[in-house]
Amino acid sequence: MALLSTSEIDLLRSTLEKLQEGFAHLPDFSPSHDYDRMKVVLLQAAGRMQENYPYHHPRYAGQMLKPPHPVARLAYALSLWINPNNHARDGGIASSAMESECIASIGAMFDLRNPLGHLCGGGTMANLEALWVAGRLHPGKTILASAQAHYTHARISEVLALPFEPVPVTPDGCMDVTALESRLAQGDVGAVVVTMGTTGVGAIDPLPEILRLRQRHGFRVHVDAAYGGYFTLAEALVPIARLAFQHIGEADSIVIDPHKHGLQPYGCGCVLFRDPSVGALYKHDSPYTYFSSAELHLGEISLECSRPGAAAVALWATQQLLPMVRGGEFANGLNQSLLAARELWRRVQASTRFKTLTQPQLDIVVFAVSAGNARDASNLARSLFDEAAKRDLHLALIELPAELVRHYWPELVMNRDTLTCIRSCLMKPEHLDWIDDIWTVLESAALAVTD
Image (cartoon, rainbow, N blue to C red):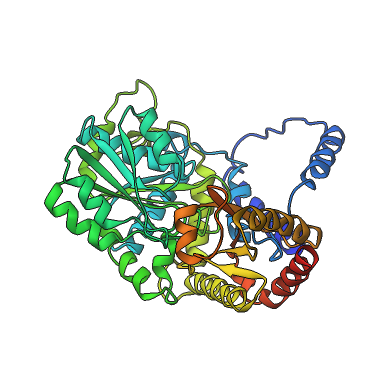
């Protein structure tokens, strides 16, 4: 899988020529640049960029890093010759319209019609906006999220001066509904964050049960689907996950990251609100940015001001090429990732060198290296991580709490508070075809550190 494709370079050149036609009527303006000096600097930058893991290759199966689709990469680059700003229509006429179309398409994935929403820098900013709205509607009330939810929720709550409390999880890493119901009975809860794909183990919180609790207690339901949201299109979901995804559209707010499974460059997050009337909370005046259109500007429904129109152009192009629909090419890629994770988990489970923990609900596989106690198993996991990297297989590590580990591995002597495990994100559809290769390298690395 080569980084450089002459076909992509040719495509970029032809699309830039098309773009230039739209401005051919203007008087000639050709700023001078020292391209020889630029080449020196760019070659230095290329050399520095070699100091990276091969994120684009199937042998990289560690963190949540999925290469952008070529159409997204090219559309993003194309837009930089205009460099639109999607804060207001004046700074990005075409890209603002494209962003609105993208929001409509993403909303349609969750069966939402005309949701209020926009793109933003990533999941952190998107979650911030959702919890900011929750705080405006329920001032001073507590935000709840599972103990396995992303750490950003506790940090965002602190920024917003809102109380935050974690809710215990079941052994599979999902929010414990019994514990949640007990906490809700105490009152003073403004919002519950429901994670659809935790970044640790890929766990999916029980959304249908939480929605039923909303009817009784009146809190806002915010779905953090930054990682897992696109899997709503996948047919290969396990039944309990499919049921949860079917109810996402009933949440008050939703976050999804196109720069994760949506094949986009960083940063491209998205926040959606089921009730467009919350847009009134964003109301502000600007003396100079809103003059070319009487329609609502994206900057009037966003906490961010300047935002890259390039992100909208790239996402729009990707959605045109690969419609976000069930049964389509894009959805099939998600199915392949799910199947790859299940196959790797099956092989790990059958091996005496490893110990499986939570069964994957999405495309994240977590497992331990067999040993008699947690300290030895943790040391072996770190050694395996290093040994696999020497063989050009790049994985990740995760610390799991003792209470979760004991459920799956009761005979392990827990002589430390956590267990270091191997974590693998099989985000690329190609991972399914590379499972044999990945397993061969993993076994050889395990043999080197355990014998």
